[in-house]
Each structure stands twice: as structure tokens, then as C-alpha cells.
Length: 114
Image 1 (cartoon, helix red, strand yellow):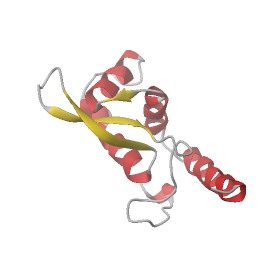
Image 2: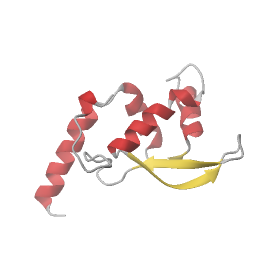
Image 3: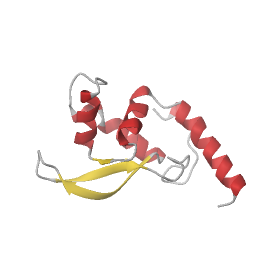
């Protein structure tokens, strides 16, 4: 990727990041340099005092949105130690920390996405 393309993609990413909700930003902070399941993210949100319970519903909808926007990706699974089922493992998208292109390759207006 040439420098101009990189700079414009990075600027778009930074512009989008400014419009994320507080919960989105908390999840991205938690995932920085880690790979975690939804349940692990929810537990970390609780431990940090961001939520009042470790319920996965505090994290799951925002993780789905972050994945749709390209900020996080999942490319593997692991067995959950609580449910004993295979679950997705999420990590921050290292391609500029996220992407401004949705899965159907159209630009999204993040202000109207949530």
C-alpha cells in the first residue's frame, strides 16, 4: 500500500473511532494486544468497573457492531470453560486498528450505524 493510501485510510479510521460509543472504546481497550471470547470480554468489562455485571449481553451487541465495522475480527474458536461449547475468539484488527469498509464493501456512516 502506498503512503497516500495508508494516510487516507488511517485518517478515515481515526475519524470513525471518534464517533464510537464509550462501550465500543472500552472493548477496544480490553482487546488491545489480546485474543478473547465474548464472555472473557464481558468479565473484563465488569472487573474494570465498566459494567455492573459480567453478563455477556453487556458486550455481545457492541462486539458484533465492531466486527461489522472492521475494528475487530475473529478467525478462530476455542472451547468455553463455562459452557463447554466452541466459541469465537475476537482480536483487534491490526490493519490500521480497524477499517472503514463494511463487509459488503460499502463505506458506512458510523454516526448512523448504532
